[in-house]
Every structure is written in C-alpha cells, then in structure tokens.
Amino acid sequence: MTKNEALINYSLRIGDTCLILGQRMSEWCSNGPTLEEDIAMTNISLDLIGQARTMLTYAGEIEGKGRTEDDFAYKRNEREYFNSLLSERPNGHFGDTVARNFLQSAYFYHFYNALISSKDNMLSAHATKSIKEVTYHLRHSAEWVIRLGDGTSESKEKIQNSFDEIWDFVGDLFETNEVDRLLLNEGISVDQTKIQQEWNSTVTEVLTKAGLTRPNDGYMQTGRLEAKHSEYLGHLLAEMQFLQRAYPDAKW
Amino acid sequence: MFFNINKMDINKKLEEFQAKIDAESKIEPKDWMPEEYRKHLQRQISQHAHSEVIGMQPEGNWISRAPSLRAKLVLLAKIQDEAGHGQYLYSAAETLGKSRDEFIEELQTEKAKYSSIFNYPSLTWADMGAIGWLVDGAAIVNQVSLQRTSYGPYSRAMVRICKEESFHQRQGYEIMANMAKGTAEQKAMAQDALNRFWWPSLMMFGPHDSDSPNTGNAVKWKIKRETNDELRQKFIDKTVQQAEIIGLSIPDSDLKWNESKGCYDYGKINWEEFWNVVNGKGPCNKQRLKHHIKAHKNGEWVRKAALAYGIKQKEKELA
Ligand SMILES: [Fe+2]
Ligand SMILES: [Fe+2]
Ligand SMILES: [Fe+2]
Image (cartoon, rainbow over all chains, first blue to last red; front, side, top):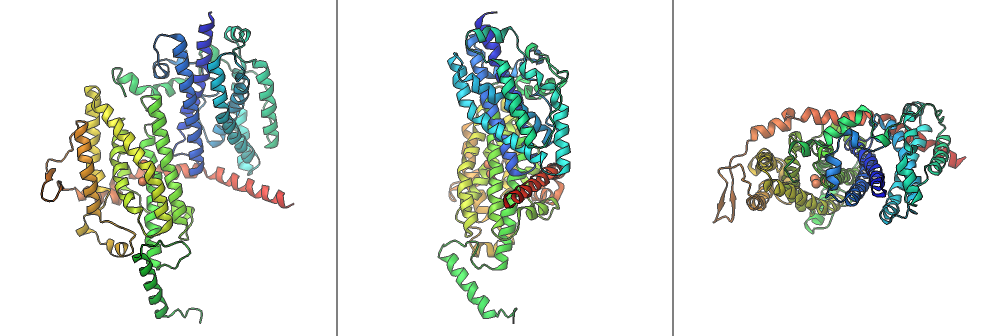
C-alpha cells in the first residue's frame, strides 16, 4: 500500500462517516420534538454533510482520476463505504439518536483535536475548521444525555436502553489496520489508543452525570475498515443515490 | 361597577386606534386594540406559522434523495429557514395573548388552517424547483406587502422573513433552469412540475376580490394592504417572463399580454378544486396533519423530560 492509497482510505473513512450520519440526521427534518430541536438537528446534518464534502473532494484530489465528491457519494456501493457502523444505525426514537450521536461526536471531538497536529496540511486544516462544529455537536448531545437521564423515569429508562442497545457498535470506532500504521509513521494519522482513552473518560463523565450505567464492553461488532456493514446501509444508499443512478447522464 | 365600560370609552379608543393606523404608526402588543383586530391577527399569523411548518413536509420528502451533496445542503438549509419562519411567526402570534401550544392544538384539531398549497404532493426532484420558484415566489409577493401591515411584531417578522424568501425563490428557479436545459427527461420533469404547481400557486392568493367577504376590516385596519387579485396579478406578471427565459411554458392557453392594462390576462381558476383542498379533500391533507401529530406525539416524552430536568435544576439552584 502506498502512502497515497492509505491517505485516500483515511479521508474516505472520515468523509463517509460524516455523510452517513449527516444523512441520518437529515431524516429528522420535520420530525423533531420541538421546532427548536428540529432546527438544531438540521444544523448538525448541515455541518456533517459539509465536512463530508471536504473529505470526499480531498480523496478525489489525491486519487487524481477526476472523481468528485458526488462521484464518491453517489456511485459507490455498500462494500466501498468506510463509515463507522455507529453512524449508519437508524434514528430510532429521539433517545436512540441522542445516544448514537453522543458516542460518535465524542469520538470526532477527540479525533479532530488530535488531527489538528497532522502533518498533512489538508487534514489539519479540516480538523481545525471542524472542531468548532463538532464541539457543538458533542455539547448538544451530551446535554440531552444528561437531560434525558435526569428527566423523568420514562426518559431515563429510554435513554439507558438506547445506550445498552447501541453499545456493541462502539468498538468499531477504534479498530486500526495498516492504513493507520502507515500514516501514523508519517505523522499524518492519529493514535487511536489515545483517542480511545480520551473518549472513554468523556463518555464515562457524561453518563455518570446523567445517572446512567455505562454498558459493559463485551463482544464488539466491527467491519468499518473492511467496508462490511449492517443491512441498513444498503437501504440508506439506495434512497440517497436514486436520482444519480436512475439518470446517469443528467447534471443537476 | 367592574364591568362598567361605557360605549363612549370604546368609541374613543376605536377612534384613536384608527387614527394611529391611518397615520401609519404600528400597533404594538401593549397597545389597546379591538377584539376583532386581535382575533383576526391571531388567526392570520398562526395560520401563517402553521404554513411554514407544514410546508417543511413536501420539501422534506426529497432531502434524502437530493441529487448532489450541494443540492442536499441547499434544500436542507432552505427547509431549516422555514422552521425558523415558523418560530418567528409563532412568537409574533404569541404577543397577542395565546401560546404556541394553543395554536398547535388548533392546527391539530383542524380549527386552524394552513396554506393549501402544501396539500399537494412533491412527486419529482423538479418539484423542489417549482416549489421554491412558484410557492416561495407567491409567498414573497404576499409577504412583501405584509411588511407594511399595521401590527408591529407581524410586520417586523415579515421584514426578516422576506430576505430569506427571495433566496429560496432564486434557488428554486436555479433548479428549474438547470433541469430545463438538461436532458430531455429532466426538461419534461421541469415542465410537469410547472404544470402541476402553476394553478395551485395562483390559488395561494385566495378567492377573487368579488368573492372575498373577509377583507372589509382587514383593509381598513391595514392588516391587509393589497387585495387578493392585486397580489395575484403581481405574481403572474413577474413569473411569466421567468418561465419564458428558461424555455418552459405556463399551462394556461388564455394567458395573454394585455397592452391597455399593462399586465397579463389569465384563464379561469378552478375554484372548485381550491375549496375542495381547503376543506380537507386535497391529495395530502390527511397525510400532512398525521405527520405533524405523530412527530408531536413522539416528542412528548422528550419535552416532558426537558421540563422535569429544568425544574430539578431550578430547585437545585434555590437549595
Ligand atoms: Fe418561509
Ligand atoms: Fe412563507
Ligand atoms: Fe421559503
């Protein structure tokens, strides 16, 4: 594997996770519990899709074959997507979305904070720009974890179940392969072990504050690095890619 | 004694109120106003707010399928603006002494209406163009006029909203223009969307002035500054040319430039369709309301939790 191949894959991992979570968050539009929350969730979606565009465009630039952000978004299949398993989980109820977003945002927060020091200028600039947005996403979801955990007995039960159900998918966030090793040697990628420690302390802190029980780290689902996903991703892509696939000659 | 408001007082107040309106100064929430003025505005502003919110649904229908990431962002941001418009308008309506919850209750129990245009389905991506171009375009004509409405909070909300609406209109027109010069299939989609949305857009302005009983006091009190037909004519006159530029044709064989009047003559509007949709028989009336009620119900436990949490926090502060 060349450095460029590794860098393309690394950019796609970031871009794909942003895109898929952004797509999920856009499903909340007109479905939020209040107008204010509807707007907040749309904001997160806008940020994430914006971040995805930067990373997919960058992947195309490194590749040098003229592929655009839309080529990457609309013309790849399930087995070519490198988003986290967490990001493709369905929205479920509001608490399910909050739990998923909190776990993913806490990851992005520490990930981007480390990526700011990347020797790759583009990744470093992207991290610097995105950290502001992700800080907000983390704060927003963490506040809701606490509110729901410390709200009514119903909300506490719901959000606890949300965490219990989704916990199997957090391990996937921290998996590494030769891409990470190669880029870490070059000072381009981040040290996942360190991210995991920081992530652990953020998550434990917020769950404790919310009066919730941190689920046990048992057997974890993985697959992100090999583009092996749940069945949900195929449906998400089928819907998202419909127009580009149905009218391949059209420009929009 | 307590109820001894005599007629003289009311008449004097009414006179002062009318004088203020005639002098073009704005009525503010704390000012005295006739009950009928208050009621009229509560109804109009809340229905405007409901329209913004229900209007999120037909466009929301295409977010997940937007054909490019840029198009997805533009559409999402547009719908988010509409949610924001709903917010300002509910706030403006609340200054008249009713809460947002009460207004939403009226919407969900069908005591309050919203713009009928949103009871039509969005069938293809071209509808995102047609809605922005025609529906926001028609809304702007109405809202520009409402910037001069006599009730201060409503007027200010309109000023803020109009700026964003003209973006929406341009973005919608851009989608239509791109599709009209695209593949044959795209052009056909664009024309079809125009065919479906043209007449309902004209209906957005309401019945002809001759059939519109409600305008009396609304005009005198300068809530409404221009009549339905005047506004509709403005919309037609600015839109016909825009269609020509991108090579689409308006689906009205009677549409003709009238040299002597300096505006377009247009064909007969199907008022039977209009009243059917107003009275709940449009293609999506039930679906739109169900969606709204479902989202509201699904969010109930969340709102309760937030409220309970807020109370606990306050108690902690006080302890
Ligand atoms: Fe609006
Ligand atoms: Fe509007
Ligand atoms: Fe608009």
